Length: 312
Image (cartoon, rainbow, N blue to C red; front, side, top):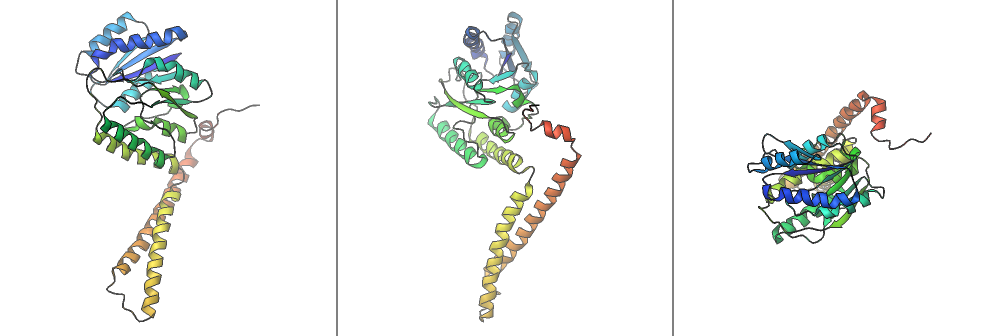
């Protein structure tokens, strides 16, 4: 069973064509599939059109959100309704090509858990291409997950990747990062990207800025959730050492007879040492809280979350 999740907001003019292209791409493959349209509070006539489409096609599911909650919430609602062993996401603006879905599925069959599309030739304004490249580069450097196009809407997942996943804010951009941190195998393939035919893009600089903060949150939770001392303690150690070196230098010149009371380096050195100690203490307290939480978890549930297979 294959589930196609389509988040949309005011995309009335592209919905019929999108469904027709999805059907044309999957019916030759003889896949049993469902198409889940998630209407994120559209104000055009898209909901009425989807309702009619649902009455005509047995494999169409329509999810209507009360208002515009954002793409992350729309995807989350679609994932909860998906019944397939494999879930594919695709944007509703017709820029993602449904004919690429069989390629994603074939790559998934090679043993990967998540396959992300890579828009090698983007049909977008140069400003958006530039921001996207900068965002993808920053994501790769900060998270350690090397993808050329982490934000591509065309992706294929095994259903287990999405179990327990909770999306909010701009976290839908970082599903590959979240999956990688949980030990799933990630791949990327080049996909066709088409010019926008209807409407306008709703992505702007503000969304990339919000996404940057979510990236820091995802990276912290993924890398340091179970070892916060490594982050806070490491930063605290560096700052404390810098403060110690500064104070040691001032001590030496003080012994030599120089005055140090008027030197800004004295204040900076003391501040660095104090902040370093505070960060080390914060890391230790975080470690205590984390260890207590881990001890309260059921041992079997904790094991099941990381064990992929047991051969007896």
